[in-house]
Image (cartoon, rainbow, N blue to C red; front, side, top):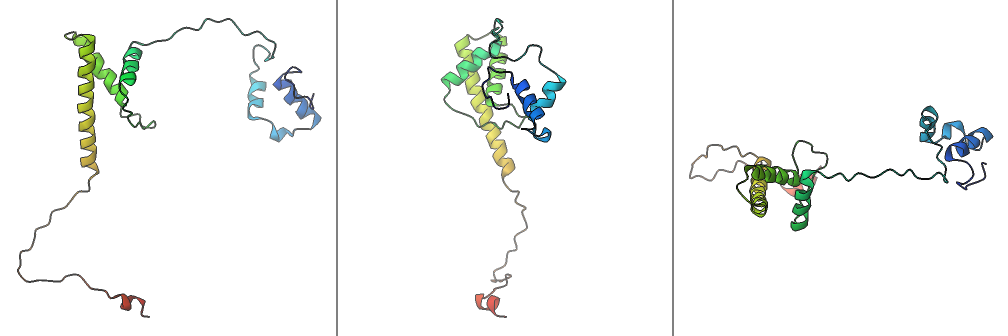
Length: 166
């Protein structure tokens, strides 16, 4: 079995066991999944000729999926998303929150709620960018300015020739 690569002859588990028993594969070089499969063997043998189970696939849709789809379909603007940042919600999440808040008020129809939520999102993102740009600017410490008419040179002048003279 060690020289056969056909999946019709044995399973991947039996083929790996055969390689280990024959010495073609060292025990230290066994695949990572081998110990897990030996500890927790599959309920059904993983063979090529086993028929696939006939399990109906449930369609999973959430209420906000329609809103999200409409938002991404109509807005070609892509927002940069930091996937490791769990503290700040994405633009899509912020839009869905705004849309749901406006729709619960019930005063506007669906199209007006969508347009209003887009406008509010743009304002919110603009304010976030402004806050971030203000926070990123270095703080300038103001010092009192000395007013004198005399030209005072407080800086030391260095000549290039002096630097290279030893």
